[in-house]
Image (cartoon, rainbow, N blue to C red; front, top):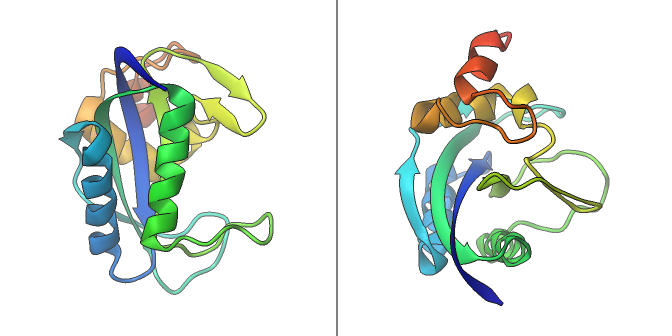
Length: 159
């Protein structure tokens, strides 16, 4: 179940249903039950990507230490999403949500399974991930791209 090794993970959290900040804070409280948040970015407001909504997202990134093995971390984050009120997707499209928790990195692991990929496959294409991640650890080296967050952020086309 739980491993004995402490994993350094990076998580991206977002919410675009009010009360957005409260949902993010709730997720952090739940995460604290099975690990330690060692760094937390500022709140960043961003428009939705991939769909239309009248409410922007608030996004944060966390550096999170946990002894949960990767599959249990994924299960735990999905349980938190459900507790906060996120509904299962009915269509294969993006939609508004109380909370979204993405696992960006776990140590220097590369995991490529059908429904679980680490590093997160789209993190480098999303300013709403790169900006808060840059704030908490711009020197982090992506294990698959062999580039730092700073390099990715500096090369990103910011609008």
